[in-house]
Length: 276
Image 1 (tube, one colour):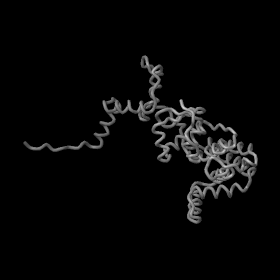
Image 2 (cartoon, one colour):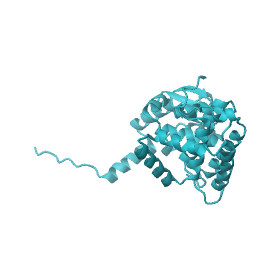
Image 3 (cartoon, helix red, strand yellow):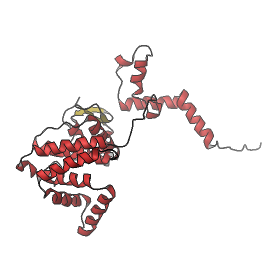
Image 4 (spheres, one colour):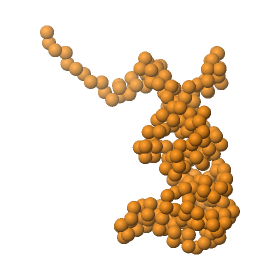
């Protein structure tokens, strides 16, 4: 009996088959969906029980993969964080204004950095284009045989020599430039300012409330690019902000303030102590 030739399906046929399974569902697709729901969060049965109403559908959609969520108008979605960045710069300037001279020289939550050094680095980063920042850090690292953190410390210390009042005025000027039409800032630019706010406020006892949209964006971006040890925690813990409507990670819920969670994600503090 002649052997039957094996014919491999084309990429187009494979794509059609995958799309069909996604739309109509298969045993494998349903098993994957149940796994996603179980890993992400256990839905509230009181909210999901009953007839299939639009409200229940919207609630269930929160637990679906992004490709299966309802379509919505996303014309306003942008990768430009200049508005939030300008507000964060102003908040940081207000925080510096409230500090005493002793606070100015207090060690911050970033190892090896004083509050003055953190402020100096924020001013340098906000005032310097991205490519110029990269070149400056590389040049210092090669010249002085330093790691990036040491190069940033030396830069921050040089700028901090201008004094607290001078840096505060520069921050307000930079905030105005950042908020101007045509300005563009990435989430990493935003993260540098938000993290500096938390690194400073956590050691000087001056509370600061950052816009939850900004703190949530910073936390999410960091969770996607965090070191292995941080990602390992996020696989088993859902870090839920108590003062912002956001969370990162999956698993057992661990609640904390936005500051506590962001500082943990950047290695500046341990896990938030409160659980729930």
